Each structure stands twice: as C-alpha cells, then as structure tokens.
Length: 206
Image (cartoon, rainbow, N blue to C red; front, top):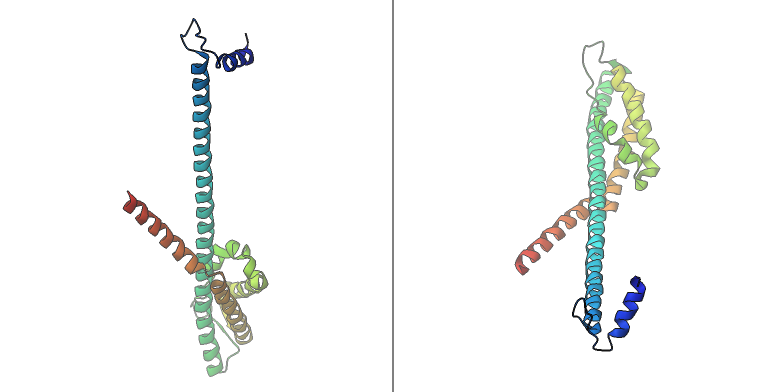
C-alpha cells in the first residue's frame, strides 16, 4: 500500500473506531496526528515567512539609511571644500587687483596656493549618482577641472580666478538647495530617533 492509499485508508477509517494492530491507534487518532502535524507545519511556515519579510524590510531600511548618510557626507564634504576654495580665490582676486597684477606664480615664489580638490576626488562618484544634482554635475566637473589646473600649475590668474568664483558660488548654492530639498539631515536624525523609541518601548514592555 503506497503513501496515498495509506492516507486515504486513514481518513476513511477515521470515521470508524478501527484499531490498527501495529500501533493500537484508531483511525481518528491517525487523523488527529496528521492534522496536528499539518497545522504545526503551517504555523512554522507562517512564522518563518513573517521573520523573513521583517528581515528584508530591516535590510532595505538599513541600505537606504547608508545611502542617505553617504550622500549627506559627500554633499557636506564637497560643499565645505568649495566654500574653502572660494575664500582662497576671493583673497587672490583681492590681492591681484590691489597689486594690479594679472597673475602670480606660486611655484616661482616657492609657495603653495593651497587650493584643494581632495573631497571631490573622494566623493565625485556619489555626487554623480545623485539625480537631484544632474543639472549641476557638469558644472562641478568643469569647476574642479579648472581648479586642478591652478593646483597643478601653482599659478593664479585674475580672469580664471574670477570665473572660478562665479562657477563656485552657483554650484555651492545648488548643493545647499539639494541638501535642504532631500532633507537628508532630518531623515537620518528621524531614523535614529525612531529606532531609539522602538528600543525603549520594547524594554518597557519587557
């Protein structure tokens, strides 16, 4: 008697108080046993599915948070670097105009103009991937390309300095707007506050 014939026999025999010789169990006992096993498997599967879905949800939230944190760090870092460079460029412009010079070679003076592009080199991939910065991405690349020339050549020329100041101010304004629009700081703060509150509630309930 194969499995399905045996199961059919058990279900039919369940209506009669027939006792099997090998186990001493009636058909009704077999039905209860099999029904309990099926119910137990169903509960286990339901719990497993619930835990799996909860884990996926947690992982999605964690991945999104890490992405937002990375974007915030990149935006703030590049924004601060542009602000720093603008201050340096404005200082150079002022001095060039004051001395009525067209350019100054820091290399010849054995000095460094101290312009920086480290943050851009580190975070440019993250900046390039942000949809809200698509309109200004090309301008950022042009700004830092021109800035790299000043850094590598260690020469500050009045017209290029004026152009860099105009470019930098426009980019900085756009980055500030993007940071506020995405509300990245508040998103991250609210996420951690929510986690703290849930943890406190769980501890209180325990």
